[in-house]
Image (tube, rainbow, N blue to C red):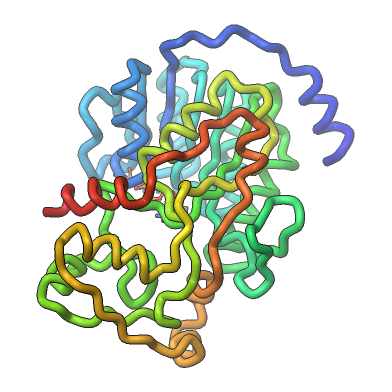
Length: 317
Ligand SMILES: NC(=O)c1ccc[n+]([C@@H]2O[C@H](COP(=O)([O-])OP(=O)(O)OC[C@H]3O[C@@H](n4cnc5c(N)ncnc54)[C@H](OP(=O)(O)O)[C@@H]3O)[C@@H](O)[C@H]2O)c1
């Protein structure tokens, strides 16, 4: 961290945060962002979401319409309001240009920015178990590499008096999304039907890769816990659920909920990777050290996987 950034941070003033927050979501009608929007409204916050307006927003959310890729139109949509947001959550930042846009447009307008990154920033072939944030090797390109570039931009940009936090969720599941955490049955719209038909699931590596899925509603709670939390400022934190399972066990839990048996056909990792090299990040153990999340005083996700998957299955039936 350079000296300028440190001095800007040390000059930040602690202002009292109201219990009813003014929250802006970039995104707001999708899976993660919609879950977050609903929770924030249910907690009594004043929630605005900026999207392209292609999907309906949850009840109680005030819309702003703009495409973030249209820089001038996006800036102008934000200028329609003079609000200084207590919390802004960039749910759809995918690259360095998005983080730059956040810093430039929000440093005078937001008290705290949360940027949603991903565990796919970590190089899959150079993992620690569990993987922490300190001792890490990163991807340089692709989805995870671009997210890492965005994190670096945010950590080095002029963010003024705005606090910021980056969260790195692992596989996110729950109502609002499809079931499935591993190829060839990741986000598989037919999963419940396949299991009921007794079809074997074709899992790469037999599904032996470890995972620690996080329920979207738990992630939303952790995001909201960043507000008015100076200890979270300037931090990049892993965030994952409380249950570590082999990927096949995720499917076994779903089969148990449905009252059917699970059959797995093992696909070769080597063959699958040869045909789908861009999917390499799925094929490693995805388990994480959450001690930084805890040290920052952020909410630790607590819903056991079996409970979260039950709610997820029920939402799809
Ligand atoms: N799913 C996972 O397992 C997982 C794991 C780790 C990290 N993540 C991260 O979690 C975040 C959320 O992922 P998600 O798939 O659930 O997304 P999401 O929150 O559903 O995002 C889609 C939302 O963004 C809006 N949107 C899309 N493009 C836009 C644009 N150009 N300008 C303005 N608004 C736009 C969409 O509305 P309109 O279409 O109306 O614009 C919608 O409200 C992402 O940052 C992802 O990388 C996901």
